[in-house]
Image (cartoon, rainbow, N blue to C red; front, side):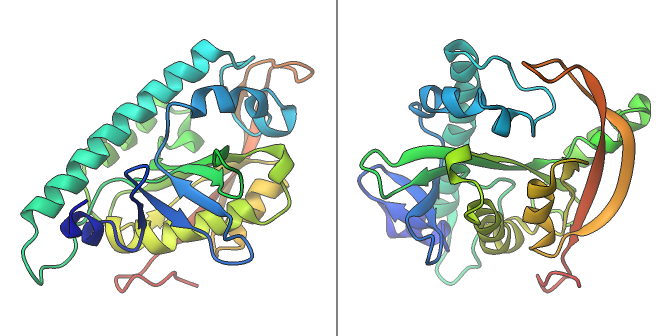
Length: 259
């Protein structure tokens, strides 16, 4: 692998065996890494995503999660990773000596793995994407205008509003893993390499654990929206409209999280 590509993925590391970048969490979670998606993630995701302790945090994932649904999602993610790798390689080719590192419109790592296992067990996901302004769901025309305007902004534009979607295997709950992953991806990649300046995730009102992931990082409560998220019936959970909390992280021009 070229030194120029390794330079472009900083501060991520490079796995020469698997030919992919990765982010390793600091101790005591240094056995946890975040990598690009892999085809094996489809089968590995079925069991955790059929666990109510996990899927109840999502609005409308496929349920029950089947191999077909999981493969379809993995196909989408693998296509995105192929494009991301092309952009990383192009940035490496075009880089000149001493030039600043390129700014990207994506994070190349999202799949959370336990590297203490031989197969680097897939245990979760954190996707950093442009928001869909779900808190405007009761005003669909306005929501679509906001989405379109946000999506037309060029990569690196500080006006882009980002969001975070995440889950982790129930066996790994309450270990601080997701908080550490979110902090690593946002502070080490999103802010310096994507020029992210505003991140606005949302959580269900009852999902205290997910809310803590964001508040620990300094996210502020932006708004509460009652009965806005339509959720389909899943297992013992009825169809309903759930209330959400919207969170906001603002970053100043120097890359510092605003207090």
